[in-house]
Image (cartoon, rainbow over all chains, first blue to last red; front, side, top):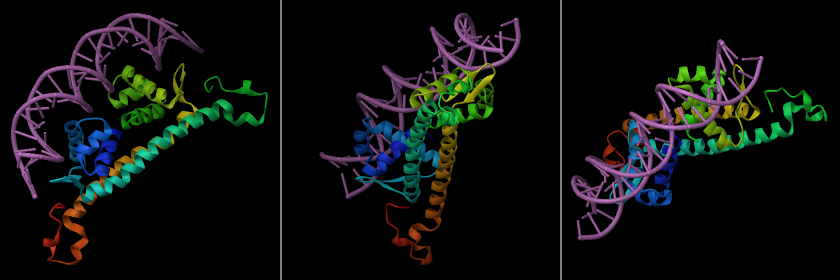
Length: 111
Length: 111
DNA sequence: TAGCTTTACGTATCTCGTAAGAATG
DNA sequence: CATTCTTACGAGATACGTAAAGCTA
């Protein structure tokens, strides 16, 4: 499982249709269907029930929707946090920013 | 960014060495180094400082370690939760298990 | 020089697109 | 028979392995 599986899964869950989700994602239905099947194999049971018109979440899928949203949100936040930490480290190396004019004390390995 | 990047990143962070991390992961150093560089490009700044003997986390890397562990743990938990939900749904469909003998009321699309 | 990491490039794996098949109302 | 999902298979993208180069004490 990787983040793409979760993104695709949420798209299908939101659209309640592999076809419409594929359009929104900018890919074709068959590859999307395959990715969903891969995820279902990894979970060990279906995430959707296939209906005559679209798909509907199973109990397992319903549960995964919650976690998938949290994971993707956390992944986005992680990147932001890392970027912020990098800016912070540049602006205030080793929290010595309180001692203006002493930046030459920075470790050589921590720019 | 996908989960593999985070797994590789944590391996390097724990080993404080691309070489040792690659051995533990069962891959070679160059591909691992490339994956780390990809992640650093996506973050927009280095996650490690390259030392004569191994690598050391930057502030950005230090921050990402925390989030990466949380994300991977949450991903594992998500799979377990989904599997548990599937078992629960099989054993107790639609929480009607309290009404023994009424399983024929199940929706046709939710086995 | 020794011990790392990085670059360059070929190979294998995986995702995606296209076309045809299957199922349901 | 129309709509949707699935299967089959070839093409393109991506990760990996090997070999050689760079870097720093």
